[in-house]
Length: 564
Ligand code: ATP
Ligand code: MG
Image (cartoon, rainbow, N blue to C red; front, side, top):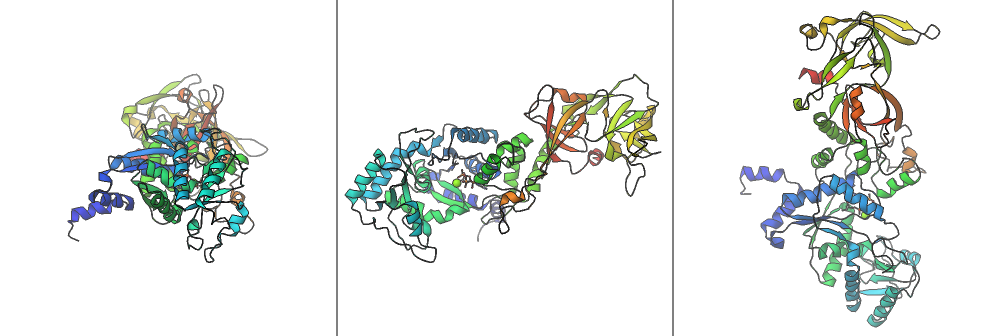
């Protein structure tokens, strides 16, 4: 309570994990070392929730001058694959983090973990059980009713050692036996009820091949791996809180270094699901086109969509670290990328729903090169040339034959400015006689209002984007919407699954006419299509077919930005 105001202020800005770490540092715990790790299981691609954990763990390592390991918790060969290992490394690097020479695998510790199991057996703290999975689960009890002890619980140490060694040698088929910790079948914590610590799996492992036919359970590998790596702060998500007593028990019984486990709330986002299993189902069942489908909340999906590492790191920083489960509005993520791309992305003019405009008093064959600012937020990005000619396209939405309400854009007799070009006035409308559909409009331009000239300051109510018809490049545009129609698709009504809330309109494909500067765009280049949104070049682009993903629509138009 004696702290100065300054100190209090400093304290306020720390999240609860930083507070714990700083307290440990003050108390000289672990000789002042801070060592964290990011421990994915390579059974799927990483999602934005993992990004949160990566930013947190690597961020703490950096902040406290410590270290952060990347460790694959690869204890389940049935679900894991090198494809996932590779993608995870790529994603962590792309997010801007570096594990240096500290890349580890739980599978590197298989021999050590086996030795730990032997220690437990020798202490009478583990036994080989012949019950099958069903019997084990039936005798586990419920949180309010104690479980039943296994009839094999009384096996002698010698018998257990013999059987466990033979399990390793491959003498028994899958499922015939397991090694269980001998703890307490009536513990109120279900995880303490003689949990399985080793199972028989005659399955090749992506790293150890056929060297093993018994594999440690995740719970028997995770805490000990942290211990082996001398992790000081093992940061996990909340669901591991109930596992902590078990991890502590293993560490204590084996007698090894004890990291400090701290749990935080996992990130949930509205309109999406965040479990690898569910995301895998969406991929396998063809709801999306792959793990990197730009609608997916995976890191590779976000990258392909056009998200930048900076925007994701900023998002992770903004949401902070919570102790209780919560759901973050996906629009906050969208806000972060919009803010980042506003500074980063060059502007281009593109028309998605073209309406032909003929400027009657403009010379037939004249082409003028207009000067356009690449990024008004960053003058150093300079200017580009945009060709202007007699026939242009504007957005259909920017014209109304009979303007209503607050519509100040183009309509008969009214003037608007064409971005970086001239002021034009609508003189007449040509319609299809049968349907009344507008085919084209005719305008006049005022040569004295060319952008940059004195007259160009003349007041008009609107500025429109446009493209020159004969110079425009056609591109395929993929417009994305939320992946699910329900804010929380995990909350399902009776008889439904989250898949029933899949948004079948989450992808719309259209085309756009874009100013010719776009032709030099490369995969992942990002642009602001003025007044429309941010777009990124997709990897499906070929020399003949330019494909863009819409990252996010633009909330505020550049008309507003202009005034700054
Ligand atoms: P999922 O439930 O999506 O399958 P997981 O927890 O099984 O994810 P792991 O590979 O075990 O995935 O996770 C690696 C690390 O990322 C863990 O420390 C885990 O706590 C953390 N993590 C996973 N999902 C989230 C999330 N939504 N928010 C924050 N951290 C997460
Ligand atoms: Mg997991």
